[in-house]
Each structure stands twice: as structure tokens, then as C-alpha cells.
Length: 278
Image (cartoon, rainbow, N blue to C red; front, side, top):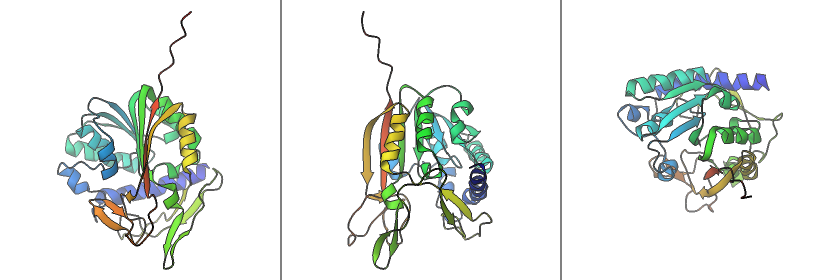
């Protein structure tokens, strides 16, 4: 497993440098530098008021959402396992004059890498598919939250991740569930942002986690599901036929039967029950 981890980390180190350059504007780095908020439509509509909250942003990549939450008034710590991504996040924060803490660590080490408890743990877009053990992730999230603290999560729907678009329509392409010692192996020539620069680290490993496993992980962490939403939109063009539905929002064309493209949820770390009166 350590070899797989190092392969993925080398790939993200390479991608982080490309993403900071942001030639095609996928990450809206130029807009962020000009003062824009980079939260995407789903989380921007659902996150609510974070002013004054202490937030842990897990798998923060180059820190754009971390710093956007700071702009919204939160005290934020971003964590990622890529040293290049963390350096890029610190650079962007320095340029923007925004105070955030960035920590380089494996997400499974978050409890020891981060100090104190948090009002909110924030996890979005392309995070859990890199994790072999989703139940362990749930326990880590629970350990980071104060009593009454909340997890907010938004990501691609596992159902959509199973599919591929063909001339005959959509078909099942990948497994709906994988186990830690049998990851899904991919090879790609370029990163997902559209930048044409060829990758040196072409191979990477992912894991498929169905909704049942995600909700089970939340329960494993001692959290209570507050709400769960499925969306017919997605923040990137997963399939060629997806059509723009607004800034950084895509949906299926009208001639295709609808299915969920993404999901989001809130879960709460329940306060300890008070002792029963004697």
C-alpha cells in the first residue's frame, strides 16, 4: 500500500504544478487572484455562513477553496499530502494577503497533524476516491469535530463514476465497489484540466466507494446524517455529452434519461448525552 501511496503522491505533485499555472482556467486561479470566490455552485449554495467557524479542509490541493472560506470569514486549516500543492496554496495565500494554515500530511494522519477540534470539516470534489479505507476516513473526520460540529461533503456520485459514455449510450465501465488491496488502475497522458502538457507520472490508483459505504463511514465516525442531496448537475464535464448549465455546472442533455451526477451531505458530531438524573 505504501508504494501505491507514493505513486499517487508523485502524480499529485506533478499535477499541482500544472494546476497552479491553470492555462485553461479550470481552477479559475486568475479569478481568485482578482478576488473571486472559487467555491463551486453546489457547495456555494449549501455551505451557509461560515464566519467565525474553525474549519479543517481535508485534501485541499492548491488551497483555493481553503482561501475562499477564509474570505468568507472562517479560520481555516488546509491539509494535503502533496508538498507541491501545499507550497502552491501558501503562495496563493501570501499573494492574496489571506491568513490560512496549510499542513502537509496524509489525511489518515490528520488527527495527529492538526491541533484542536473544529466546527466544520470540509471535503469536496475528488477526495474520497483516493482513499483505500473509507471507514477509517470516517473515524478521522469524527475525531476532528467538536461536539455539535459538522461535516460538509460534496462529490461526484458513485453511480456516475461507474459509467462510460459510448455511441450506444451509457454503460457500466468500472466496478461500483473496490477493496483496499485491489484499487482501480488508470493511466492518462494529461491532467483533467485540459492542459496539454504530457504527464511523466501517468499511472494512478483509485478506489470506488458506494453510497452505502460513505454513509457507513459517517456512522463509523460517530456522526449523525443531517441531510443528503443528489444532484443532476456536476462541476466538471465527466461525460462528453454533458451540457453547460451555468458557470462550472454541467447536466445531461434532455434526450438522455436523468441520473444523479453528484451528491452532497451534512452530518453532525452528536454531543455526548447528559448523564441520566439519579
